[in-house]
Image (cartoon, rainbow, N blue to C red):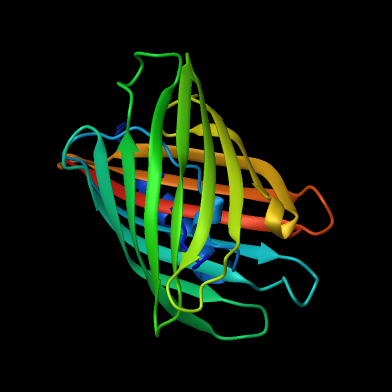
Length: 255
């Protein structure tokens, strides 16, 4: 799978806090990050808000004493726009990765789509679909990803589940189909502070991780936009998984 740098949250008046969040996220993204794929460490929402535009930077980094894992990091920059209430295309303008013991490099581009199938809040859960194509920089097989996105909100609790299948396409592509799943659960204390937990499973890599995250958002004064952040650390549950993975995400969204 191409390193999707990986792939998502309106609003108080806390401009100072938002500047601090931006500084912390920038530090995390430049000082840490690695090459599962950046979108291996994001739990997508199926909810699409018509006419909303998003500019997003996110990444992750492994902290592990093993030479074949430690130092790996990845990041990606994307722009998305929801043309209606059920379809949000997203273009990844830059995807960066650094493998252990090697220099960092730009590795490709990606076109991603989120489709919302059910009206928000009408049924027991909100359901959608993720479908994307990743194109590597410099040639080689591309990569398709597809799978259901599920979200349910009960009071202050929000739960998301993603089930994603990946397969290479084009010249030199592997015939293997890989699978990953992810879960995010958060509790809204305030819009600016939503603590929770995220869990990731990649059976083909024998890697299972879980740990605490904090998300939130602030209204940007004088605009129709919000600044959203997400930071966390997931720990390896089994021996083959990276011991610690630092996650960071910063997004500006507006109408």
